[in-house]
Image (cartoon, rainbow, N blue to C red):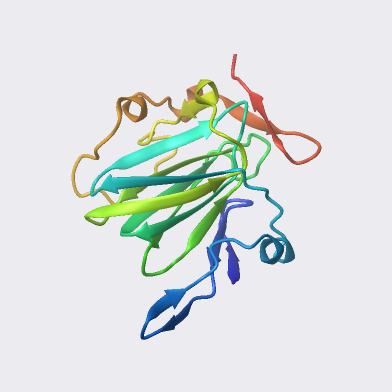
Length: 193
């Protein structure tokens, strides 16, 4: 597997080794020792799968008191995947990174805890799978406004996106609860009260 750094600290693009022939292909989506050998020390405790239609925008989500690192990938279709750094002590705080994840490129994106995450479906439909380092805690979930001009995400939109009510009502970065990084490198919640 090849691991590539992105402009956001700790956000990594992972290109798994794909074995392909006339029958199809095989790849490892996660192998703990290979990740550890690449310097990625994250334990995952939950797997999720979503299916969405073209133009659906999900996000930008994060959990404030149970921050989750995520390993995301597309199984069918394609999405424009976005991460926003919400770690106040990070030199890349408030910046975003986006990349295309698809069934053709097999790329994965590793998102560290302390970041918001979202995606826009750019194919007719997309199946999206991801691993999380903590379980889902609905009372801890927060939503960052997907089109906050202060962040300036350049979504490849053809029309208005299909949004849930929760995503439509996300808060701008200036009002968002963010994270401070503790001495152990793990994000801790910090509200802007």
